[in-house]
Image (tube, rainbow, N blue to C red; front, side, top):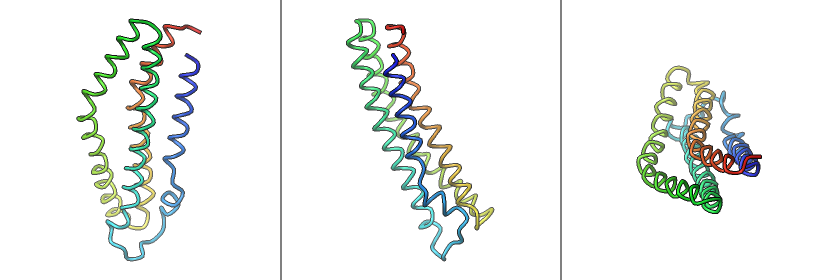
Length: 157
């Protein structure tokens, strides 16, 4: 399905662009003004959490849209859509716990970076934050890619 692949590319590009935050990325080499470490870290954790929420919302909405199209395509694909919905609900809680734990990983990494280099810890943290967001997006899109493939195989180009 050409429209689904195009929409996926659009969503990926928009989300990847939203991961950027010029103030956080640009501050990476600045010297602390005496603020406590937790205060310096807070904007990074807030940005990370906000991006996780946006990512979840966008990918879940797209996944639901794909399921609706599967349901209209055929009885077999309607069963796949229903199965995907059940699977999404079944893994939602454990997945949420695991993804919420990423902020702890990010904070731990930030503390290590700060201890190793108090002047340039932010650049390393920013790099870690970007990698975590991209990995989470890739993980969230796995099911979407499967649904797109099912739609495409039902309606070859």
